[in-house]
Length: 317
Length: 308
Image (cartoon, rainbow over the protein chains, first blue to last red):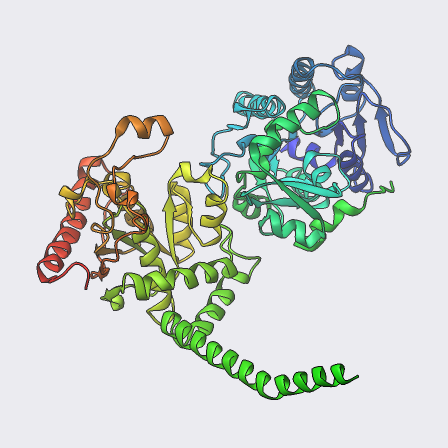
């Protein structure tokens, strides 16, 4: 029970907090809790009461972020290495950083670690059931190198969950997060003319960035552990999403789109890889009933609000 | 001046006599079209479509992507085949429970027209209408247009999780347990039920859904299949490659206009353990299969002609 008390009172360490979602989380947390931020990137203006460590988590100096405060929980949003590295390096860096977080959690007996994973780890596949439960295999890595890293992180946290008895581990797998965040889904919907695949119109599931922040806050409560899918308002066909956003779209045959995107990516003209096309080809939707029942999570934003947030292009901190 | 006056007079005359003629022609055509569409779709088609919209447009829409407008279009096209081309007779519609149920039917006819006709007949014939959700082959989902179309008319990928969820939503599920084995039979083996899969029985026991046996007569004769080329199917990556000579005759690509007769049997309920051994489940499946085979044999012996 001592650990529960520590979880309720102790400081919350947020890794990768200089990202756009991270800053939102920190702002939501800092009025009620002491917040420690750890990120290799240094960023802009922050609320004064946030202890900010601009450190690479793999360096031994990073241990002061854990040592100087009595931490109640760690929220791991992930690290983005400072300089551009190869996909291979990014992969090993991410996995080693997560491993280091778990080492610190064990060393300082931190009661809880929350990992923000993603529903994309299940992978978009033709034979996916319409609603994937938490028990579904993580097949996202079968095609995409980016997803392979996410899957690896998720699995790594899972293996820790049954090895470490002292730390509660929560893995959140949200559907496509929409907002001012710079992820593939939001960037895709922000395109002035949105390319779609000719003859494909899969159901898309999205979640508002603030709903994800709330899900993280809910996961920080005591006695909550395990894996939770997080989804937003009811899923809609891609064509309807684009209609609601008032976007023009152009349909491209899959084979052509795959070639073109591959070329554009190689030439660094596109941030989307050709493997990501599967997300607008097949379904990758989650069943969030566990989060609703055990976490008490319920999306607060309607479909229109969730979609409209991608257009808040100029982001005011 | 004289010229323009002559032209003007001609125009006036044309307007006086021509417009009523044209508008009468339009009226007659419209009346004919309405009569025709009433013949195909029935008097209460609009009510049925309204029912569809109410059911699937509320609460953020159908989670599987059923689009009432696309479904309406599909039923409109299918109604021609249902009423005029195959002149479907449905028997025993009262046997279908008002909530969830699994329709288990024999599969035949080289292409799955039987499923489409069952779907359109259940939307157009009973009151209130019923929407049939069938499970489609996984490989069809990777085809452009087909996958989108199937989803929008309410068909879902054939995995057990989807079936379970649909039944929990009180939907009507259509299953062809023979799968490709049934649909791609050569003509010589018509109306012989092939081996049944066991999945539907486990699902029925688990969800408590009754099983409605369905016998479809008429689909076996629509395409005469002389045999299957296994190597061609393997080469093209499709489930079967039937040899159907009639498609070489002009117009033979369309199925032969046989008369469809669909029989819905009394619902069967099964209990027990859904995770029981295959042998236990197989015994129960055998009962369903036997029931459908009996319905087929009885109806075939009553049938006088194939085309009328």
